[in-house]
Image (cartoon, rainbow, N blue to C red; front, side, top):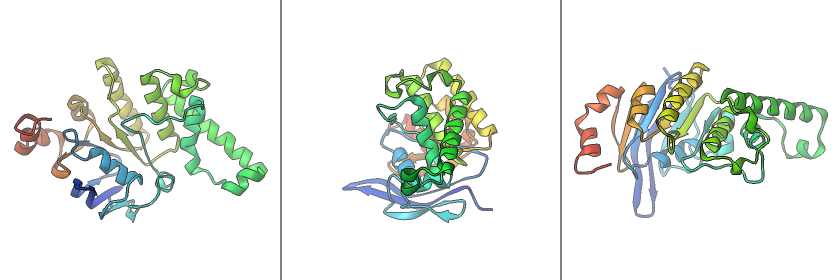
Length: 255
């Protein structure tokens, strides 16, 4: 059976640093898979490769069985794969609603020429884009932020707007890069519930996270990276008991 996401032998080097080395794993449709590892393990680099922000030096990335490695981010997003970022990336000078609408545009049909000429169907499409953006804000219970300047919002609110932007494209696969960063215990509990609600919408999730309580609570499977190499890929409890994982997190390598 074809996995929704199939990462095969991906390697990536930056100068003298081997960020990823022959990494392979699969994400099955309808699951939540976590990607964990110490700082510098290559997690965000792997997200960049999967989402089109970086091209691998070797290996392949297949989405629904078709190769996407090296495709630009907007093309990857248009195929049904969206992401959030470790460091929030919102557009300054735009409202929260406008930022979320940007996330919907990869699903639109209007190109540059149509955007210049404004035929009637482009107006209808723009209204549909706004409707979907408002639905995403409603889903995250932040409709009141629609008209606010996005970059003037609090950290938690900006996180929510960025997630709404990712959801506005109605992705099949959602990549969450450290969604619990900066959250307190109560907010992390709410995040776990939100991940469950997103999954109930039929969205498959790949999440990078340092909060192990959250990882063990929401994940079906966990991939562990250390120095750019995969050292484990199994159910959460099996990963917790894996001697190599324990060594990486608690032994001489630290975390």
